[in-house]
Each structure stands twice: as C-alpha cells, then as structure tokens.
Length: 115
Image 1: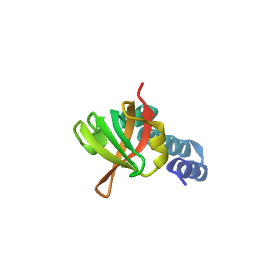
Image 2: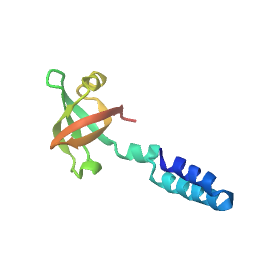
Image 3: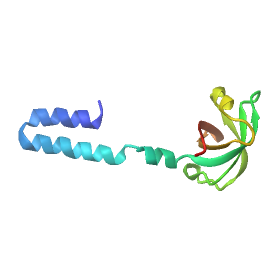
Image 4: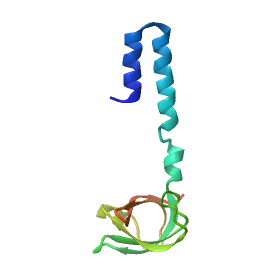
C-alpha cells in the first residue's frame, strides 16, 4: 500500500476536514518525490557508440559526464544484461543511455536514440 492510499484510509477513518488535510499533505509529499519525465531524462547521458560486441554482451561508448555515477566523460566499455539492447545500435550511432554501477561493474540499462 503506498503513502497516498494510507493517507486516504486515514482520511476516511478520521473523517471531516482534518482527514482530507492529511490525505492532501501526503499526496503533495509523494508528488515532490515522484520522478518526472524531465528527471528521468536528466539521468540519461549523451554518447556515441564506438563498438558493439554481441558475443561478449558489451558496448564501447564515448560519453559525456555520467551524473548518477559521478563519472567524467570518456570512452569506456559497458556490459549489458539485456542483449536485446545491442540490436538497437551500431558503431557510429549517437544515443542517450542510462548506466548503473552494479557490484563494481558498469552496465547500460537503457538506450534511446539521440534527439
């Protein structure tokens, strides 16, 4: 059960305006912490594919700074867990991607064409 559902349940139990105020405050709190499309897009990094290695499930990408990893721009090799991502790109493609550090290894978890 999420915070908004709990607040609405409390509002029903408390009744009257005080219950509605609790539900509204919880909803406002939840909306401030929910990721927006702009926030999700901000987590994407611009890059250019240098090499696609389908056998090893790896991508070599020249990229700008990766903010969520506190990493400067460079060219590096990333692993992919979902090999289907490799079918979306080829060397020379401009893209936006999401990378994550999982156990000290860097994985590309999302790929979008550059706009």
